[in-house]
Length: 89
Image 1 (tube, rainbow, N blue to C red):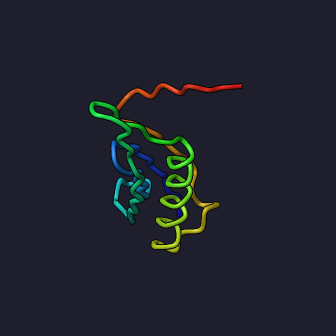
Image 2 (cartoon, rainbow, N blue to C red):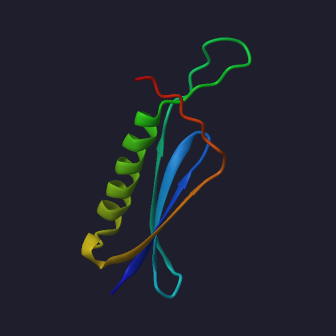
Image 3 (cartoon, rainbow, N blue to C red):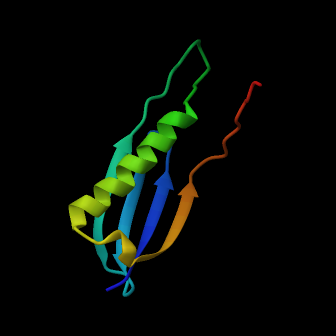
């Protein structure tokens, strides 16, 4: 059987879900990530935390369902907000 993987990045966590091709939910897994508040009115998150949460959630839903990753034929990714990355070289 084949499956599709959905990934949703939100303001406090990253979720992964697996569906069969008929749209039946097979499982889900959620991994939270921290938000830092360095001063009043500021909120910061680190992209490395998002990346780690992505790996944790995808591995978690695959382990929870027992689905063979080779049977996942599609992936969709969504986030609830825009992200700005400041990079220093």
